[in-house]
Image (cartoon, rainbow over all chains, first blue to last red; front, side, top):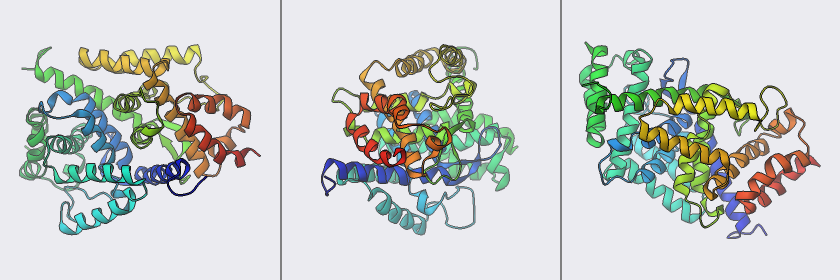
Length: 200
Length: 200
């Protein structure tokens, strides 16, 4: 049986979503790999971030649930399949965090999470909205990791998007540092000291 | 302070590992993306698998801990940074699951997990060994997902590695089907019916 509500129809919906998610591997970011060889895609970025959560869990506040942070990071960029990556330091195209960007991302979430069976659709959509709102301890820590990973890539590759977009120390502090420090103050202190030579 | 055992030395070791892990994005697999546009790398593959675990959790046995499965899948391919991907259906180079491959992977695990602070080194190394041994319910389910994701990529891209390596229905059953069915029998039934036309 393949009718709606059957186990087979449920699997068809789960795989429709998983096959659509595959497209995140073709969404390109501004940041390069650590070795500078090419720009990173949003699928591998999401994996790297989940690994960050696993390895840097001791940088989170005591009330953070790392398993929820990992789940959040696995799905946090799926809307980019429709909207594309919106670089933090770029001035062109959609502006990071603007009303237009948020509306486009909400529409993308409707479509992409809408492929799932209703229970999963509601759970994963809620998890994505929690990440976007950045109000819960889990979301705040997830956002810190999402900000610190490109900083490491820039540090390792000799400047990266800081050079591309002529980023100043003040801009780094405002756009990136405050967000990292909010969820992981010790992490920002450590990374900031290593980023300083690039802005002197 | 940057001496051994200080918070700063701990972060340096955590980032040495995370920066080394970045190289998994440059390890190429035999399988293509769903759209067939290029081969997949092992970093984005690891992300996709973790998403599989999140979305297909209801296919696991009741005693499976999905959070542990996700953690396992995030680290399961890191040894490929040194050893490369060993395709299941390929006859060239290192053979999948051979003694030589397992020895090379164990050496890679020593080096790569060895970058971490000792607590994380022991935890993640043990998790990787559990995955490799495929004896616990969590590892058995993780292995099922690792086998089913390339099957979906082949289904979606018109044959993929089944065509490349002239795979027969019997080989698919032995190398892939039995492994998927062991941890997720319902999943293999559903996928097998959809793969059948490629082997008739």
